[in-house]
Length: 493
Image 1 (cartoon, rainbow, N blue to C red):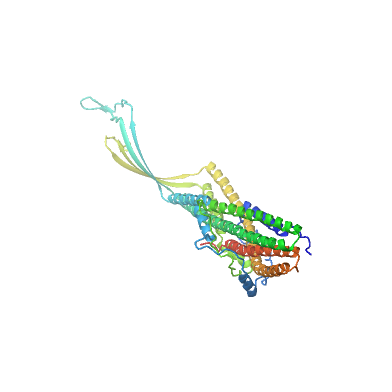
Image 2 (cartoon, rainbow, N blue to C red; image 1 turned 45 degrees about the horizontal axis):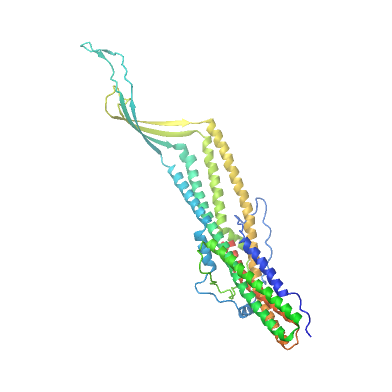
């Protein structure tokens, strides 16, 4: 005699699981904070790294089990979409990346502008002056009695070339400004590279979420097929009440399949938006998800932190910005000292006022002067400018400490997630193998009346959950390794 069937465990677990996934898709990939240095705040030592068990790794036997248990997943499509394809497309078409490229060009222009400051300032002017007519005083009389007066030239034309050399600036200000501009350009380049790598990391997360949704459709379809097969058996062996329960289960799974398909639509739309890919033929999975990746080699967290310090572009960018601001502070000090300029002029004028008596023709003259100047207003302004730059340096140092914490946490979280994902490969494989065998036995016993409807339903629920866990472990392994590679800077070209 068949016992009453329990609530629809399978349907409810699938619906809850898919609801959680839909929340993840709606939120998108999380932006991972990046750090600057792997040193604590001044005067504070870093805490000892937490110990991570080196035994937390799937054995070769477990990997063999994981590779040998079929998941009935669709094979990778040749030419299908891969995580690296998505990352490359996002880096190439991202508006944020183009904005960072514009900042790099702006910084390059700043370097060229600072370089021009090393050259003496050259200027050329030309003037034409029309004078009013005047009567010059009589200087004397000619032998014939006519008065002697200086000539008056009403049309005056002059061309002047000036060469100015700021001697004090060449030693106290311009080299620091030029070096600061170069540091700022390097910081902009590192920031642009870091932005692209972060976008690529987020894009890989989007890709694997889309793959997860595609595979959930397959699992939900398998669960639906099992429920329909169960219904066919129930018709011959169970009471009308049990048959109604299984029919309700089939209806619920129909809805689950539809929800998983909708998740795929949402995930694929997000992929197309990030990739700026035109609509048309649906994407196909180009990675073999059933293939188990080699586990990540155990490592000490302190060494991983040091690796991230050496290779993350965010660290280099912040270092360049700090140096740029320090050089700006040194350049601001130049305003406290007197300013010495050497100025040379060449004048070609008609008439030339330096020539006496004046004659109506172009004559050239030159002059060289040294000018020493100092302004208390400029000195006070330079002092306050120096204080402002020092405050910016302190602000960058504070950002460095904050970003340090972010990088440290990112590396630690990514490494532990990879270790957990590697372990999950083996444990979910064993669970799937056991669930497959349990379902097979329960199904055979149910057909001959030696297992209850509830036992078979539980076996179906356990098998579906085991498939979800096994597929999720494979996707999570790929996603976690990609995130760890980014956290360590190993994705840098």
